[in-house]
Image 1: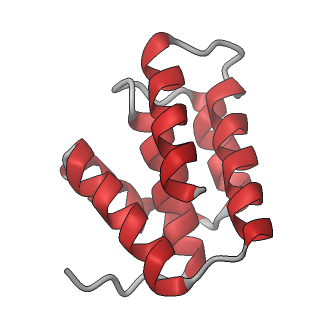
Image 2 (image 1 turned 90 degrees about the vertical axis):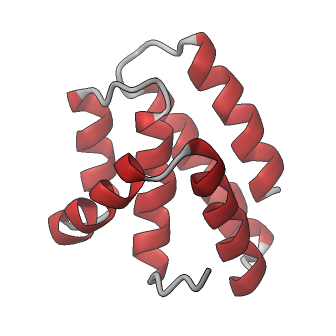
Length: 108
């Protein structure tokens, strides 16, 4: 599979995947993501995240990181932003905790 994402599209995809992992995207999560990426990028990527299966989403994230050689600071920043998505609505459920662990392993 060929990914033609910009860095911002990748960031939006990961953050939206995190927000959607429990099948509910809160207004607070949406607002946080929109503070990181513009509206056009948000909606362009949103549809892709909703359509993709969990397995496909995780494969895409892993592939992008591998192909684009993210440095450790970029990875750390992304993990911090994922955590902020999960805490945006002031509650983290079991699914979000599990997905965070998986994303943390994939991102490194």
